[in-house]
Image 1 (cartoon, one colour):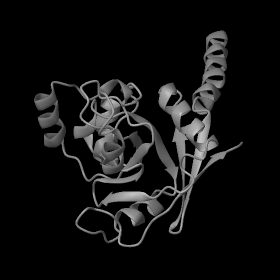
Image 2: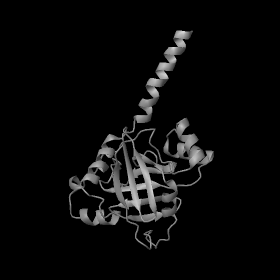
Image 3: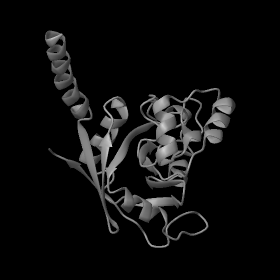
Image 4: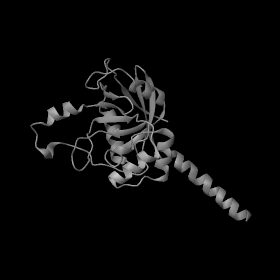
Length: 215
């Protein structure tokens, strides 16, 4: 029994750090309203690499949160209208997208980081548009209704997290989630409550800077 106990202890010591270190890239978003920190998921590697490369290439150098909807999302980067305008004369094979990465561990809880997209049937992501989930309170009936409507099944972890944190479960399986806010969620919630115009653009521009956190 002592041997078994020591063996189990070794397993715990071995695997807990691996789980803790699993997500190897973190970002800081700096805004005039404060900063918040984001963990990128290693299990959505294509989207992780996309944003890391974008940071290195200054893609988000002069970016703004251009679509803010309280209890829904805070969206930034290239706007849908700008993408549509840029692509209007291009053939479909030149509408560059990143294929979707769906994982049950990545879902639309409050603070989740997702990739925007248009109505393409592959549900592939825009290359330079991101959003953060604000969402709202989620009930058992909400999840049960979504399961029936979309013919999906929420995991135990997803259900417990939605009930405790809230979010936007109706977007699961339609938009790729590839990270989450782990510090400074109050800053994101503050931004989500800013006054906007009829197009959901904030009355005062909200620029942001993304810095990769080196640890």
